[in-house]
Image (cartoon, one colour):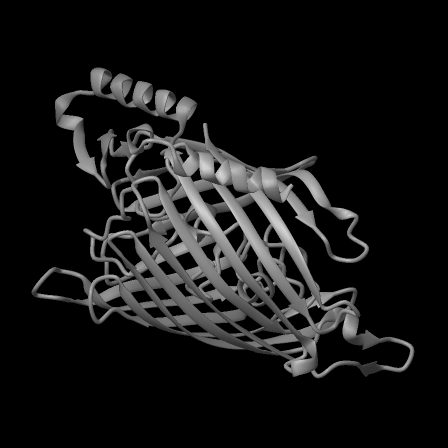
Length: 402
């Protein structure tokens, strides 16, 4: 397995650069600070089939529209003040090997997920999106929202979308740089929450206001970004379980283009099987993206038990009710088609050193085409809660837009 992975990587290193499309840094021309998979700079875009569909729709709309009813908005042509819908889809497949005791070599081949989405605008100022996901035999709605965004200083969004907690959470899987999100994003941002809720992809249902303030006179970038969310707290595709709502907010400063400093706070709760657990969380973070170089580091703290901590027979809680974690990641562009990511990732499920889990990761990203990304990732894991604390993982992931 290791020989095969090494040989494959060496072969890809040897490919001529003309075979690969040059990577293009995410656009920052609109001055917004937020980096989200629902912003033009962060969406994975169309693929082989969806580009054909999108281009055909735009040509048909332009041909049939009266010139007085056509005007540009958000990068696409508007007909009768409604944009031509834009479709996109992609899948991620994975191979996982592990020498952890009892894992029997890992999961092998698996479908990470398949996603399809459509977005567009109404009356120029209302941006909508629908995104569905399939995991093997499970189909569910991932996102649906409508956002009024007439001003950069104030936008209002309602529906189901990403929580405003951590820089990494809103990142599209294509842009994370590694084969999975960090441990704190997975456990404390709601991707696969520590409190016992189902995997939500870092999302919830509710209302958000956000904006970008104080444009720079030099290059137009915005110095301050804010988001404030009022959410159900139960995650995706679920109604509220009590009268309380989760309040989530962030303030982010961008002193220079590409450098973001953020504070995040979250006060809420989660209900399951008649048991209510608190979510009192905060985080501090730094993020940098410039000319293909990437660096981010985040620390998050959580106060609140897991549902499984409660013993109904004794009416008591086990565990400390606290958790925290941190990570540092860097992405180094090597060629037009190769970028290598490194990450140190740590999480303490009980905020004790005895509960520490750390992962050291190396992950080359090989982008041979805008619709094709290959990741080969090595992880060394040290988990102090296991009898045999150290083990290794080898992942291979294939990203395809279609």
